[in-house]
Length: 203
Image (cartoon, rainbow, N blue to C red; front, side, top):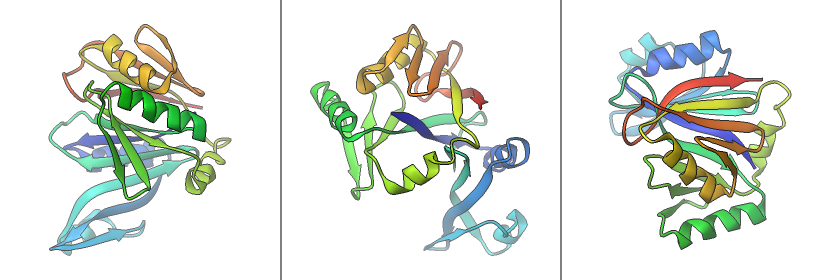
């Protein structure tokens, strides 16, 4: 079981994107959006002023480094908030997590057979995957970079941690949950609903 992805929502997409690229040395995978009614994507090489000039409206930016994938989506909050966390599990872990979610009457949504989302009822969602070739390729780069700790600011740290631990059957110590080689730690002082991104530790 491994945390490989998190999806952020912020009104400062360009600044957040620039932080990951400039300060943390992430690669820009693509910017996805539309021009008029046509959906389109642009890989690295097109500057923002060029995209603005052709009327490009961003839906999300995808960034990647090592075994970590980050998506940034336009939204209303200056400080990025987490919409969902993405995990890859083995087949048995995946089936058991879905069963626990259904037994707890949590909403489970499948998107085209590629992604399965589980509502935690704690303000954020989980994106769960059984083994997939494209995730295996991403995780194979773990010797370059892995996420050791993810700190999220929340209104109810222990409640949000409990929701995560219950679905994944992961070890919890108060407001911290150990998932594979990553510790997800919820800290006090955050908003209701989606937790705020507070800190990341990469190794």
